[in-house]
Length: 422
Image (cartoon, rainbow, N blue to C red; front, side):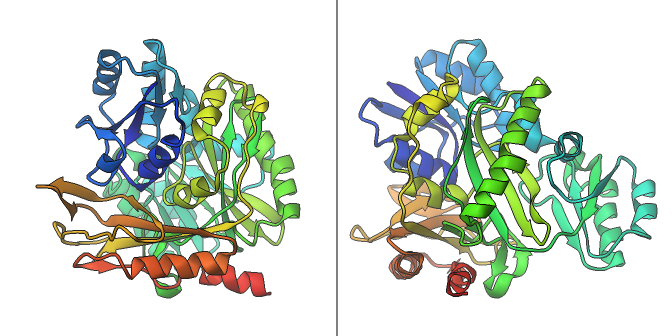
């Protein structure tokens, strides 16, 4: 059986590595993949946004199943286009991927169906938004409506910061057309939790919870990034919280999308905040998170392809989805200067005896050497019986990996470990 995975980052590497465990899969193509993924799949130079190129490759190479991993091709309709030519897929169609593609849509969906989230207002012109800012509670959260590489959310702690955020998004168009409309919403407080869920529109199966670390520097300082590391499970996501989320958020979201004629099939990501009033939705994503996937999938004991195929065929309720009772930690090794200006082209050396999984996010092959080519370069992942052991093991492995210009946070998991002691 031949599979095709769309995307070229650490998330896709983790997905491909897990898919390879199925003996029925004879070949995996990655479009476009990267220099590290090339060790586990055949990389094809077709961009993730090139929907026509993806479809043509799938037809020409008799692909049996496709996994569309990133948000852009999902929102652009890659699944629709592939299914139209008879290729089954894991991932939502464009009509459902809008749950991430438009924050205005997702906020209005939650309001309509009573799903707990922050209070908000929507604006499609800067003048009205700036007028609202003058009386809005501070801090406030300002979000570009469309996709913005995970950077379209600004937490404004002063009114001046809020005004600047509105102007940069709506007038300066720092996120392009994604900023034609914005959401200004209430600032929530509490621990954040990420929960990825398999769903076929009939059944909802949450995966193990995780905790992301967005800021670039230790102590949650510095600029926002795509994620500097993750741990799983998240200690704030207790059994009671999980039950409440299933009742008030997860199943109502699945049913709301069905009611809107936008049945969601794939991985639905719930970004949650555990507030004093209970769990609330911060955001939805229409796909596996990055780097949450890098800690969640290594804990999956069931066969990933079997689950994905069941989702595609709307029979998720018939298969077992089981996770290990252990823990995992992912430390992201990045290029110094990320997420701002950074240099690339440095050789990466990963020892063969490293006692961890290394997922490659930003690297290319040049004359059989693996060179850095992006901001986030590697995700070094260790699984263990306890979170403390996983964190310790991940950092031991990080210290064995080498490339010039590397940096990482040294406190991934510290907050979770502190919570476990309380």
